[in-house]
Image (cartoon, rainbow, N blue to C red; front, side, top):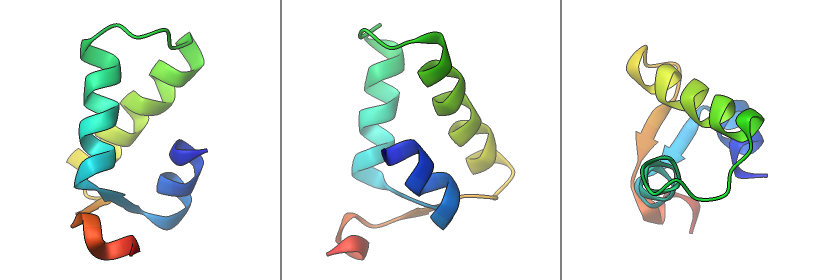
Length: 59
């Protein structure tokens, strides 16, 4: 799962950031737990516990 990998690695690609943002803003069918995990990633980004990296970082 993307959320677990991001939290474990401490890195989030710009594409993943867009996907997570879209999931929250579009109100896609996400569970309360998934929404909590996504919010946790955004919180970690703000406190720099997770780093935003270029999309080709994982290539």
